[in-house]
Amino acid sequence: MSAAIARLAPAEGQPKITTNPAPAQRRKPRRALINLARASVLVGGVGLAIVIPLGWGHWVAGMTDQTTDNAYVRADTTPISTQVNGRIKRLAVADFQTVKAGDPLFEIDDAEYVARVSQAEAGVAAAEAALRNLESRIELQRLTITQAESGIAAILADRDRASQERGRQEALTRDGWTTAQRLELAVADTKRFDARLREKEAEVAVQRQQLEVLSTQEQQARAEQEGRRAALDLARIELGNTRIVAPVAGAVSASAAREGQYVRTGTQLISVVPLQQVHVIANYKETQLSRVRPGQLVSLKIDTFPGLELKGRVERLSPASGAEFSLLPADNATGNFTKVAQRIAVRIALDPAPELQGLLRPGMSVVTTIHTDRQATDAAAH
Image (cartoon, rainbow, N blue to C red; front, side, top):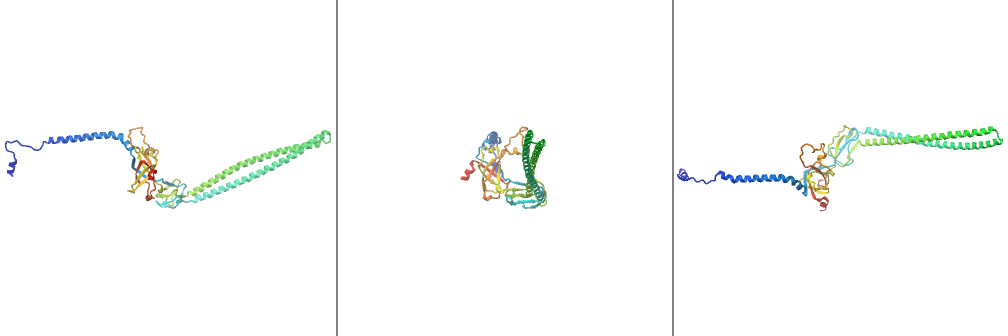
């Protein structure tokens, strides 16, 4: 060991030779490379910070296929509410049961409403009887007027005869062939018949006025009859509303109705979801809708059914962004402002998919891709 060390050690008086470079010399190229990389990153970051805001929106808007995962299956769900007050006496469906249009859902005790229908029917019968009575009185009044007019004709004949007799008596009196008593009798007859004629004419006028009164009463009776019939129709409608049926075919939600429960008008008890008429609502950013139009082809992937792609078409776009329909819309005219891309809802109609018939449920997540360069009709033709 000592001999080896002696051989490696330099001779006394000779300079020592160093083979490794100084640490400062080794660090200079590495530092230069690091500085260059830092400068490149800084320049690139500044460039992206300038270019992306200016050109990103144009680049996204110009894309042929626009995709979003902010999309969900939807259906025109019908909430079912009561239209009358009462106690539920029977439940006809279970939770999530499939129903057809017109199937009963539940029934409300109808005893009170059956009584109201009977009461309304009695009111209609009374109104009809009153109307028939007035019609009979009007007919009788017309006959009375006819009789009075016939009496006037008879009085007119008597008055004409009395007037002729008076004329003859006046002529005979001038010639001395009759007495003054007979002339006075003829004059009295004429005056008497004139008075009776005026009396009969006044009686006819009274009878005609009575006919007008009866006609007005008839109109009132007919209006009363229509009102009673309307009340009967309303009572029958209320009776029918005690039986709640499904307005459309579909599946019912969890029911909030219980037998014996008292419900009031407007109480929402159940909903019917038309599973055969589902659609998709996709919320696209406003920057993605530059080229989107109704009728364009849409590809859809539903998270529940991976690997399966459906087809559809753009039906229509929402008239405003979601923020416009919120309870408290944003007011950008005051305070600090940060621009955020708004989302516009797009309604997408699904093409028939027999393999998923009745399996799609509102609320399922969907990934949609709108092909702005293809129409749904064109795609179907190919």
